[in-house]
Image (cartoon, rainbow, N blue to C red; front, side):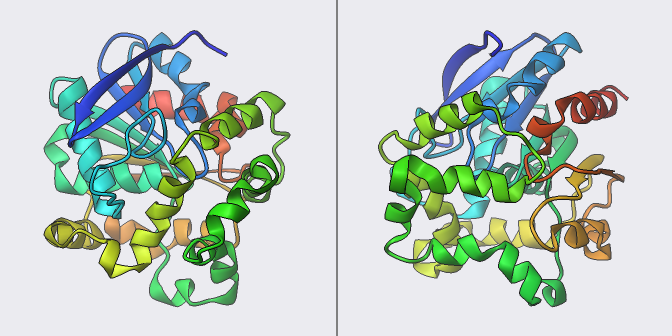
Length: 291
């Protein structure tokens, strides 16, 4: 694994820890579930070689980053985290890259503060319309979000040294021969106190109004409505969970991204495509950022 610099910074009242490599314009990379900053262990060196300062934070609640003191994990708060990190780590502008929850965070940040976003890259993220969301296959692919509402979810995720996490990775990226070192690294993160609770809280806040911050409703509505007006590269694989690709290819997504949307599908890749085939994904990202 590359020799990353590490650091921490206070942003949006949370002490964020991060991995860093390179010098130049700021490129911030945000992970999803069940993942951590090392998700970008292949991309950060390539960003550095291309003349960028690549930084991958551990998202709120993913140790060593702090959990929020108010216990809030509403989606729009992650978007605010991104905006705050742009200011805390750079000169008020950044390139944004995100996968899964991280993709939602950087997309929302681009709605809330487009003047701070030079370009946007989203990985394995689409915008399914209501009709698609109601199909059996789409619900099958999002079952974990509903299961995580149950009181036994923490125990299930942690059971047998986080076998759930490994199986989730294999299910979401079925053609990836996952390195043992990557699985060991993600287990190490999830063993840290509070990480499982934080990771599940992202999903619980989505469906339970009592876990949402009423003062964030206006910003949440803005993000939900869009549009994204900054140039965007969207990457997706053909082996992600059921009906995800249909959401990526939908007109609903095209309408949301109005600043220029470039879609790229990489066959054989799943939800963690930037880890599965970095030799194909990374050059596309670098070329887009430098264009």
